[in-house]
Image 1: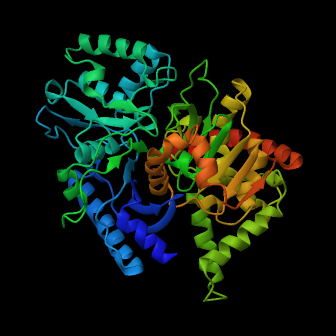
Image 2 (image 1 turned 60 degrees about the vertical axis):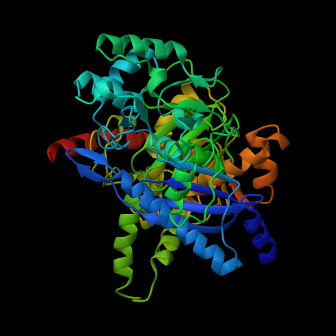
Image 3 (image 1 turned 180 degrees about the vertical axis):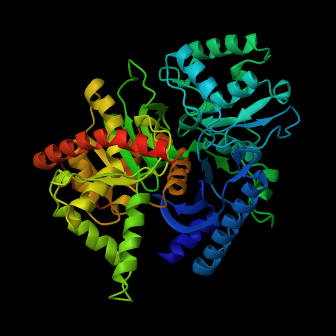
Length: 532
């Protein structure tokens, strides 16, 4: 096996996927069938500079070079081969945000990340004009807010892009992004697979009144779909990845994608009626639609799959943070009696106890907010647990309540899709830390959401792996009818998984919990106000 992989590496029959996440830059190298042969990461953090969350763009290249050097080192040590050429590459990043350049390619203002909530005025105006939800983190909201603010750099703006779009441009010279990434820049027309022309015309009219002299299509990157060739690695780009000069130029690079799109690929959830739930520090659910929604909701973002299917996304800021805090507290207590116990044992025990709890949590209600939650109109977070004197307060109910709470906010958003819009969904693919104890949160979520939830035994290395999969798909697109066909036949055919289906009694119990949860939100608001 190692000898075969060595030959593939020497031929360059390998793919590189890189994702620039919020806390780590991750890279994976794969061979045929998206099999991972090397991986690496680089830690980085945003900085708050003059009230703006940002990253130093020089750190982008330091992190990428670190990851590539580690991969090259692993390949040499494990397979006795040296990487000189790579057939396909792809680059992904946290979506949205604002990176603006002048005609000479000079950065005009520090990179403004998705985390900044400084565009409320612009987002509200655009949402009203378009009759389409424009979240504050979207690139168009950042651009329009800067125009409304009369910021000094605006007359010099020539190109506005995202982090993934910036990396792709620097490596290829091509100002383009994948459609999934583009859907977090500006609304997409599912028929033309491009920016929505009617909305673009309205935007151009609005900005012209403010004295902005360019059209939207002139400043935003062009839109490509999965499988298309989005440019080739230039000599300068090759040196940005590998300063040693060993890596050759000429590699085809697939369209840059956002972390939402790579998550869909990594969980094989790109077909209509499918979806995925990413449940870690934060949580979001993405449902692939058969057609766009008739109405728009502030609680729901509309994006697309990497091949252009419309996707409804419900995003909440907190998922496992409160559970993690309680588990650490109980671990601290447990170590007084068993000093060598591991925190994994505590997770397993407490999750197992949660299974024994009453389906309605016995009247124990947890709210897990560490931050504000726009889906339910909460501006700031404050974790709390509330129970009435007659509630059944037990460890089992306490833990079940916290697991329920981890996805209750998302459930409220999804109800707009399932109940109000009658959006069909056949299966959700779960991934992330909430599912670390096999079958527990997965079963509860299936009952709460009223649909099957599948968790794969492994999903590669998350977004970086998903990006490598998209890079490989670009090489073999002609052999398959669609991205979904490729994933099903070439990537996920042998993946082991578990599926949980709704339990009617548990579903009824969760609904009782959710009604209590909604009532407690008034106490949450009062507590936040009291501590201001």
